[in-house]
Image 1 (cartoon, rainbow, N blue to C red):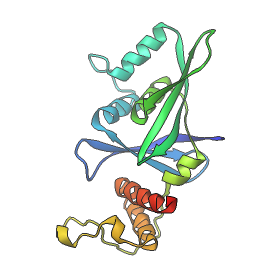
Image 2 (cartoon, helix red, strand yellow):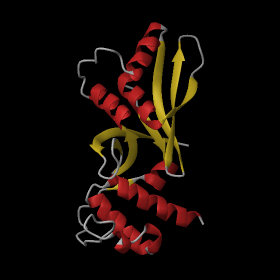
Image 3 (cartoon, rainbow, N blue to C red):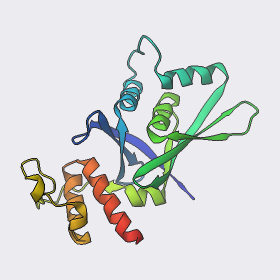
Length: 197
């Protein structure tokens, strides 16, 4: 399977979850973006590495990994987000030391990206993952579709399962337009689960 290279586009705070962030990865040779919800610690670690900020007084876990790797001549060649299962992304990073065979090591996607930023190595995924979870920003949609609005009473808020697939696709476009990537991920997962049945 061919790998598709991704680049970090944005790191945004989550509108619906406390201490959560949305990591947005964009395919280099296309318009699709992969939104991944990550925790506060990993978001902070990625942001510090991206900004080339002064390192904290005590090393973060990902910085510690870099120091150990440097000490033992271990290089990380790439990170691959290889699977999306039940709404959770799975990743691996590939590393080797001189004279040894390259090894694939399983990691949480947020940790793998934090390591990739430090090693300045590429991040990849497969077409299967990107076609399932990728979104395309569409600024042309203007129809307002209510879904879980703050001002709506809980009893009046429709659940995703209550919408038709056609309506869900419209709501997905609206969520993408509003850059609400968490909502877009939820809707995408609901559509995918229907397609798998």
